[in-house]
Image (cartoon, rainbow, N blue to C red; front, side, top):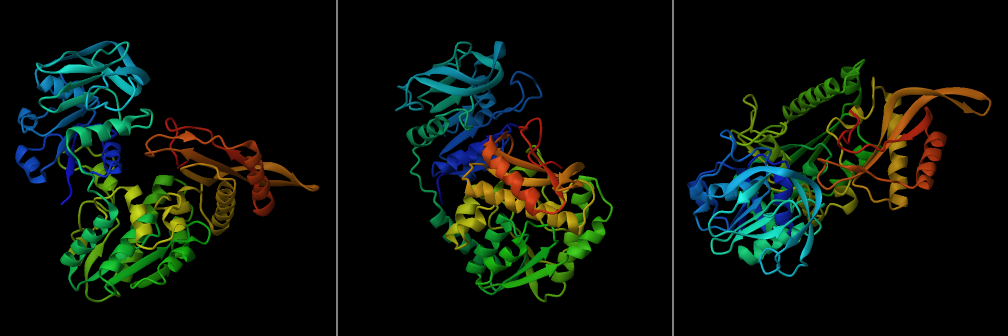
Length: 507
């Protein structure tokens, strides 16, 4: 069993990012609601506890609080933003509104004698986002960092192994944030760095075999990274017992359906490809609303999948590529729900299966990709661009037909190829077929063709993003290729909007 850091959630939007940073430091992490009981914590047996940020003020009655008994368990504690204020407040300190609130990157001076900032320079930068601050420290605590407007930007009680950061160390805007977290893990909690994917793979395989025995398993293989890695892991754990149903709705990127099939041609599993493009196009006929498209595609996918599963006898288990962010975001009875996920929450009542197999349920996306490479999937396959479940159905604005799908597939393929050839650094990039036509000139003839929008962003968590300033020379090359090689496209535009206010996808 790995050493574990317990992250207690008080409504902060960065809880997932905190957990990822801890794992990057080779220490296992788990996120639980902030009102977890002492008995539940004892079962987890963490070497340290991190209290997340949150949108509330600790002095308000309806704000989330922590049982003081949790802080008296003798386990090292690190508070972040609201978590720091909560730590101070619970231990007898005072928290009040700021006379001057702090937002964004902020210069601060840290005490390098503290275990939290050992080996670092005195001058640091932290991302601040607070309207309250600690105005009176609890007995036994002292300040170990300050800014011009925040005298208690970081606090500690070395004897009790309690620490706090008013800023957010988990975000990229805090340059040495991961080092701060690592210092807490190793200098304070005594971490040994025993979390690695080699051991994890062996444990996951052992767990799968213990759960399913000789039972047959059914997996809906969407072609995405999560379900693909799930399939590769299951086929290695229980060779010959996995049946993968790949529903090709015809809305994937260019040649992607064939790539998915090829990736599993040498795996010990039963691969079923259902070419259902015409069926999906029929269901989408005349539909323009993107949310309605999502619902139709999702419902039709389930219908096709159920029809195929009924043809397979003696299936005992349903497998899903659920990953940890799905579980965290979907919340539960105590945790706040960010958004619901179709693959979280267990089996529907009318399903015929005996159990649900979710071997990736505790992993983050970067860990899933690394595991996929370890299992023999190619780097190009597991490092593919993120792709929405409804596919190009939500990257085609307006109605959907075969002509539009082909236009977008070809335009998107050219854009992705040029980005790769010019080594442009972007975390996600794709083309959108807008519902706008514009007048153009080709030779002696006027045209009235579609406008294609290009999107490329940099992001660490997909909660926020900035557009990538692609050189005009590259954009010009992409534009020239698309309008010359893709029939039906007469104009190219580049989206330079960040998130917020825009989302990464157009619809």
